[in-house]
Length: 383
Image 1: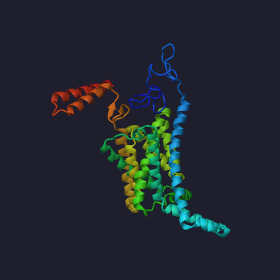
Image 2: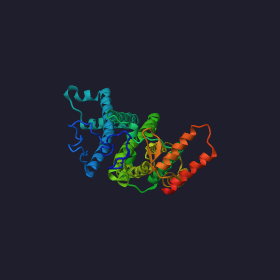
Image 3: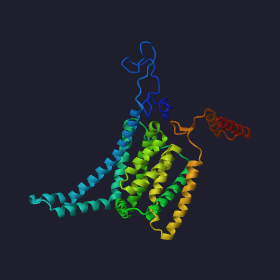
């Protein structure tokens, strides 16, 4: 069901719009007089006043910030819990209070340095736990609100053959970004901050790193920055502003200037992928392979790296054209409550329904197939 105010697609049985809160159905004359939707004495239905566009935009923006805050809060809680347990195990707190003596400044600095090194050494495990906790909390919030997490995240079916293209595209884009960062004249301080940020992912806990960085991390980030952000920004801000805002927030959470810069550009590409397919599944596949590429890219020599860069640039251009530019637009395609693809054109949908019915038969005649092809072509020409 399409919202008459903001145009957002909702479930067929929805009462309120999931994006702007507009009531979608007339409650009818059986409501109690206390209800704000009860019929007026004249017998006519008067809908309640709708919130302004500014309030809708502010509500969408605050909702996205809330889920980003949940992700950051889960990370902070896991790090704090790990530091607390580490201090208790090593007896640091007891040593500080022993005989009423306080630690010296040098001892305090050394202790803090040891704690920070311990956090970086176990960053893969910490991030895995934090991402799983974030995923659990977000799903729990939607379930408590009696909403389907998969629908709220835009976790819709996509042709599996297309997913192979996005896997290759993710690896190609990472090669281009990595080689560009290597040869660009970037400030040394920015490079040191970038390397320090990812120093905890050095392969010492490879299994946990694969789970945290390649699988769970991309899933959580795509749910928040594309599934939640884009589904709320697009109806209120428009597609262009939604792409910019989601990419900006995606870049800012990565911390250092270099990470913010390339994450913003990658976020724009991921947002465009979402706009084309209206699903986070292609973005999740792209993100997973993007994060996995550095694990084999660092083993290449200089000559092989240059060759990989040239091939990746060509692949990026070809795959972006194939998967985003040339691929048929999905503006006229929606998913129904059963997760099936449906087109808004009634004549085309009738042809699709007839094709499904023919598939249940043992065989279809050539005349029936030709008639379906003719009806489909006529529907396309009229549009």
